Length: 366
Ligand SMILES: [Zn+2]
Picture 1 (tube, rainbow, N blue to C red):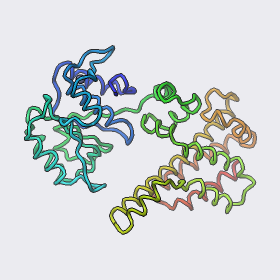
Picture 2: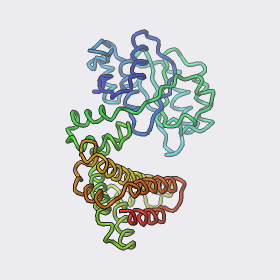
Picture 3: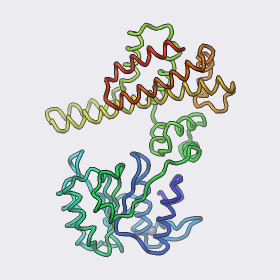
Picture 4: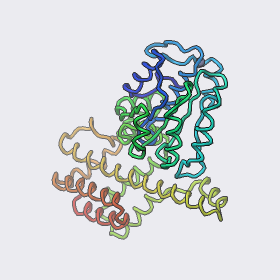
């Protein structure tokens, strides 16, 4: 049962929400903005539960939900009829019909048991213009008991008229140290791995948790560093094969099941394809991160010759080995090439070709 005390950092948003709970001045519409997995829905549900709680109370630093009343129990099991999550059947779009049926026509019905009726719209940026216009009607004259939360990773997707009627709360990156402590204390992740995951997540708590729980990431890290360590003895075609292996996500049972089930249904197939493309891109991103952090470690170790500030503490022998063979300018050149390659891939230049050029460059400099 999550409470305000469980939110990692995000002091500004917490302060705003606490203030609203203390004064009773809760807005009719909020936009909660932040990266994917950063915790938008987590925070919103903590706030929604506290708003609806029948006996909220000050616990420690914060005003929290009691977690015992009927409303809290239902909120925790995601079955509170007065906390409604807007869904959409088309993966890429929240349509005007979704908003009409689930929000505009529904707000007229009074809350079942609570003081408020709360609507949560995840992936709000997927509302097309007509869906936003339909929502605007409700935002212009909301019944007194209605509170709407639009969650989004992209504020630019909204009409100005929507933005001007909502309180916009933006998530900030959490501190590495806070994420690390959370991973160690709550998920029992060992310290060097917690350090690694929090560095990689760049302030995104959900990403850090995913990384910590993802065995594939551990494999990706190990095989990438191993590839670098053997690079000087490999022919380019061998390097290419190795990269392909590293970047091919291992098939899960789920994948094959869903593929058979989806046979013949084109839109779902496309959706499956999109998901796997996204997964592929995520792997490429993680691959680049491993390379960048590894060479950053090489640079740090070359300069300081101690291990305190290394991210890949567990790969010290590899780091030492590369450090011995590399010059400062060589390492800097590699780090620059990594940046260039990453930008090319973001600009949709052929991934395979870009990586091939990159590895020729790395090979020449180590
Ligand atoms: Zn309660």
